[in-house]
Amino acid sequence: MKKVYTCFCTDIIHEGHLNIIKEAQKYGDVYIGVLTDEAMIKYNRFPTISFEERVSLVKNLNGIKDVVIQTDIMYNQIVAQLHPDYIIHGDNWKSGPLKAIRDNAEQLLKAYDGKIIDVPYTYNENVKRIDAQLKEKLSMPEYRRKRLKQLLKLRPIVKSIEVHSGLTGLIAEKTVVENNGEFDQFDAMWISSLCDSTAKGKPDIELVDMTSRFRTIDDVMEVTTKPIIFDGDTGGLTEHFVYTVRSLERMGVSAIIIEDKTGLKKNSLFGTEVEQTQDTIEHFCEKITAGKKVQLTDDFMIIARIESLILERGMDDALNRASAYVKAGADGIMIHSRKKNPDEILEFCDKFRKGNKHTPIVVVPSSFNTITEAELAEHGVNIVIYANQLTRSAFPAMEQTAKDILKYHRAKEVDSRLMPIKDIISLIEEL
Ligand code: SPV
Ligand code: MG
Image (tube, rainbow, N blue to C red):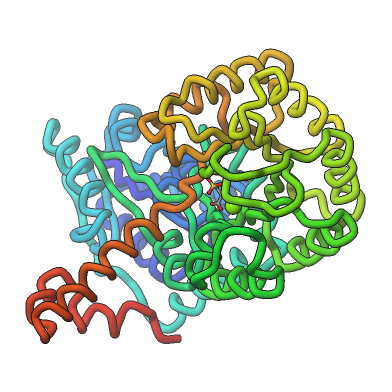
């Protein structure tokens, strides 16, 4: 019997999958691959059921010879292990980012005269409804909130990008790239105080109040499913902070990061150029402990941000604070620096990791931007936040457009740089 292979990257079996199986049976014994969580989250949605549940879902289907675990979205492992005569897939992989996967399969099959079978992709009202149900499951607070902790277990480093609106949320949600056979996407979103304030034309000094910050979160949540890390500035008064924790947790936010500063907060990237006061260890620990005490679920994380390197108080101060904050209950440590060179951040991570193997470390490489994610992960970093790049790329583009329209007294000269009207009017899917 010939071997026919197909890989299902799904949490629900619908008529599209059954159609593929029916077609596959015409060619030989059917083997179905189930993608591991690690492979799935690189290019697809986060699974709504466990890997084991996905395996038994497929095992229970009629007319299957065997279930195979697929550890990468590319087919090298499967072809080496199973040597299928046919690989069958919906024809939606003939274009777009999935085309790279088809090319990979085709290349591998060519070596021994194996064949690809493309079957018409099923996308009808029923499949659409199932798709919407999965999306809903991912975006609801109880599912979204715990996702950051789940990702910390699955990803070598959790990649987060700044968002401050529905539109930037959609970019974080939907952008997937394929580069030399590797797929990647962002895991989480960062609601930056700097960019949330900047989008409102306000300085980053805790002036934009919590009600307004929550409104931004809501705008983002409305159109996304990925987990949210909220920039909580100093956390404010401890008496207020506890209410913020409760609200964020209820909304489905996964983590708040609070920084150990007090009084009028200024953006860290000013460093010592402006007056900034670091909180005492005791007082900041009390704030962390108070926040942890009011939390209702195990999902939510309070991450303590250390400003010692920003304020030039030295490595020992940063490390002392880190162990005190962890003792006070912090679920993670963010260490910040405004140096161009990542050395002090790496030194902190290495020294912190000597005494603490598991507490997640968060870094924000805005200034020390030459360091790669892999290098950060090697030094024990668990979450990387690209904190302001979307805002900083949009502003110069918009400003130049405004200048050129004023200069030429018409919009023709800027048109080649703009998104086509057809694309902007269809960017947001209608329900
Ligand atoms: C933010 O994005 O608002 C941050 C990171 O807090 S930084 O601007 O580098 O302080
Ligand atoms: Mg901030």
